[in-house]
Image 1 (spheres, rainbow, N blue to C red):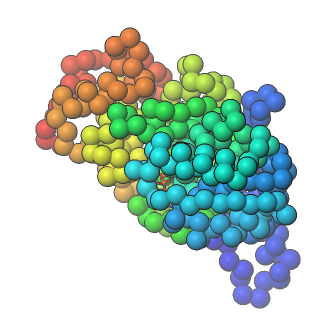
Image 2: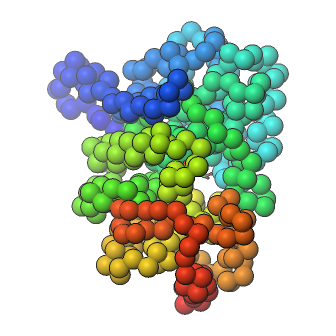
Length: 373
Ligand code: NAD
Ligand code: GLY
């Protein structure tokens, strides 16, 4: 997205394009870098240093591969490159897609030292990561996320998996990548609706633990919607810093990491009731965050600020019409259920989240039962 100004010397252009920043996800000997920059896929970054052996399988989909597969290849030197294109869409985040990838790995004779590279959004990243976790009990994995949602959230932290008709991400594994390469210029081709869905997770990061970032988003949301490079770079950078810090603190979600699921208990229920892919994940999370804020019992001014920022991002602030029983059933399947008691990520205040199974049951029924929505 950085274009060479007319008459600008090539030296300047190359320097700007090559500029990148690195955040480390600190997990001991499994620590890995998140490399962020514009134009990194234009051969500016040597990805082979994160590969184990001499061959790799790039997993992408029918939409992203025509746009970026050749550019990614340029970053892989003389490695043997296999690639596979999945059908596009959340509906294909399935055991069937996993099987396709595993078949391809086995048929190409991939060994323990192979590397799986995910090129695409969160769907491709989650499936490819899970395939990497399963094949030969775990092979190397690299994330090259191309949606905002994947760049600010799903590519970092090692959660991988597929959906089951009975629930979202019901089948999966923790499998950390060896590197995450974020070329923010790939966002130039991202449809607006997908950009907005990613902004939901960006807003989430501010809402759960960084009120200053939240305020920055209030000031800069229009720039983000216009895909202004500097604004996007900051939103991706700050989101990755927050996610990296939380994951390093609690990799397996024994406690604190669950705050990253703010809005997700409601959001997953929306996705499940509406059918995966009807509401985008980020859209469902956006409405879910407002519902979670309402359940938190925080001051109205904070709920209003959250609602206003979500609306400013062009995201839904209320859920679709779902009857109260369907809500409760759908939320009951959520992985955050513990001993028959739902657990929610709630806010003490904007910028300060916690996980709890202590909440106002009557208020919850009101929130999911209000048919005025
Ligand atoms: P997605 O992967 O379906 O991508 C959205 C759409 O954008 C797709 O049609 C895709 O082909 C297209 N696309 C991707 N990059 C593009 C580009 N640069 N230009 C044009 N089109 C492009 O959806 P998503 O929002 O990226 O990810 C949602 C998934 O991520 C959900 O399955 C969700 O459960 C998962 N998720 C996982 C985690 C995690 O921690 N693993 C966190 C959040 C979300
Ligand atoms: N997206 C929630 C997590 O990574 O934990």
